[in-house]
Length: 239
Length: 251
Image (cartoon, rainbow over all chains, first blue to last red):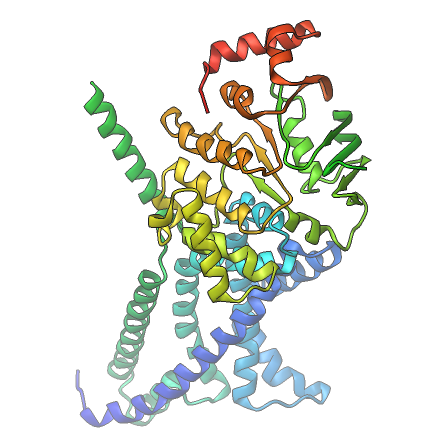
């Protein structure tokens, strides 16, 4: 087992691309995912069918196959995309499907009375969705959405297969040059672990910051506990 | 036509069961009407048909002389003129008390934020909750939540407020504070249509009580008449039963 400090620099050079791909794909997937989720919940039958088909298609096939279709397959149809664009497109469309499912769940978890109250004030459907339903759904979705973020950080490593030099790509190149596969891939793994931990901490901080009493699954359980406690106490005082 | 609200021959069927079988009545501006009756007789459905949260199958509704039944495009405008207070409050969980009251004027009436905030603060004070402006719904008691929801309705300057069993979800000790607010609204001349089992409230402020059974209005009249000599034997029977069950909570 050996370790050389000079390995760290080429690996660190892969970090910006890993982060770039992860963040860009998450952002693309977020925009598209919310849109798809709204279509699935509020759309008419054809829209529901189309969004559902999209989600099934991208969740039902391997990410690597999707990437290869985009990068190696599309040129056969005269569409040649750069490696970076192919990576963003494949990973972005893929995570959109997963994010759409998380958002659908969250939108449906917002209590029905919320929509009715919004409409009773005279809000249009789209105002009610924008001002009442989505702000609550975003808070409900955050824990599962954080998970998707972390998965994306790790899945982005497959872009090395189309010779993009992200963290994984750099590791592969470095390992082949030095014939130290075990050590170098362990270091690569530790890099990913550190990234995941940092992202987890940031997302938790955001979760705490935008938390609203009584909203969200944790908040709900907590307020129920408080109510029970209060009731228990008053019964005790009466006895 | 002089009435603020006119409801004519409303029918509604849910899953092959006809819940409303032709309900008609009129309400003058400033009147308070109380709808009573056994559960499952379509009282809540009737309220929801009036602002079309549930579209009626048949029948016509006029608000302030304007027919609102089939005016598809302007239903949002009419809903803004009709307050609705729900049994389960339905406050927006992600907004503070102030945010809940302010959002209608801001988003529906495009009122500037500062102005809406001032209005919302006044309406919260009117229901006795000025000090709870920054609290989220989960931090408020049921009675406080229901008072915020009344303030939310008031901030839209409605021509009429519909109350759908506003105290039924409350612990008994919290009912009084909500009824108090409703009584003062009635005295200030707000037009109110209230589905409730609170006979004390009905007796104190209702101009007229509507007794509904099996999807129709069985009897209607001033409280004194219904309480002392109901024409319909079922009305008297129901009133007795409800007084036994709920007691006479004075509003």
